[in-house]
Length: 150
Ligand code: FES
Image 1 (cartoon, helix red, strand yellow):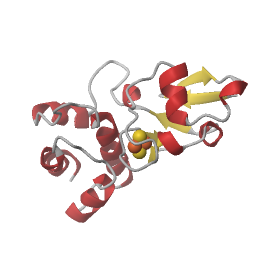
Image 2: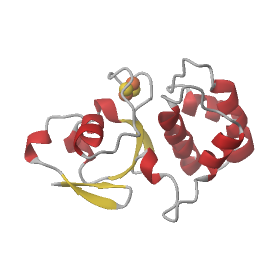
Image 3: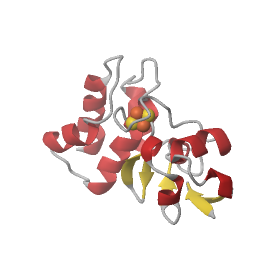
Image 4: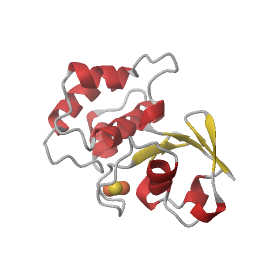
């Protein structure tokens, strides 16, 4: 069994079968960019892309990820190291505060951009509604989405 993550194959041990994807990413594969927040699919800190769709990895059993293309925050930038346009805009707008939720925020924004190149304001709100931020960075994220995604 293996996972395809950021274009690379990762071997998966049979004893990890009953674990959630987030745990496997962080504890077994060393991909620690996706964060554990609530652990029950409500905060968005653990968001990854599953075949391009924003997915809560804390509630996704490992078996459900096998056979799909996963993208984590570690795979969002280009192979040559150039930042994804959203990451660049995130920096220019100085979005992060404590930073804990930002990987999940970026992955949800990337999914929005992939699925809907010209979303309206309502679509942006809907796409980001499941990503919580206790520091209050939502307005700066909206500013980025207006500049980059819309
Ligand atoms: Fe997965 Fe909160 S940690 S949604």
